[in-house]
Length: 175
Image (cartoon, rainbow, N blue to C red; front, side, top):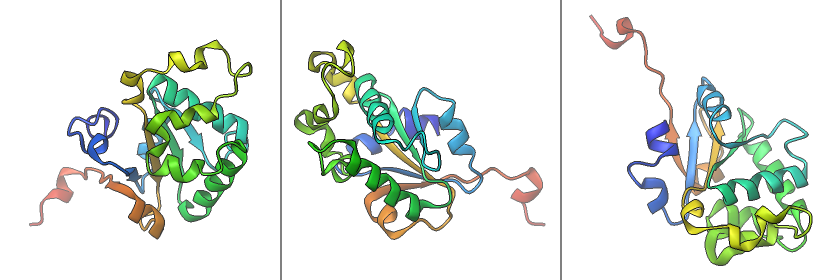
């Protein structure tokens, strides 16, 4: 997962013009792995994570520092995806299309993400001159679900990656 998703060694994520990865992992090991990596991890069932200002700061920080922004939908992907859409709508009145632009990568075009920055409130390190291309290129939005059958919107608007756990040696051969 580190090579394929986080470092994107194949370039599949970077070369996809409009789609971010959807990690499908019934065992929830991917979510645990990503939570303890250098990511901005959002647990969509956690009321604190889903507060609009906290969500905004986590997103701006991930963009600023070139980190993955992980949206963990657990097994409730359809319901929690609507919660993410709602929170995005509450983040700032200057950016009503935030969810759509985040989901299809347009947030990175022409510095659209700068509409998320609140000058004077967010600190000097979030001024426009501190956002650089090399870090922007490392930003990723990662949807994670443990639902083996994700909702239609996720399947149509993401690059689905299913995590398959390696079985015991006995499971690999049929005698």
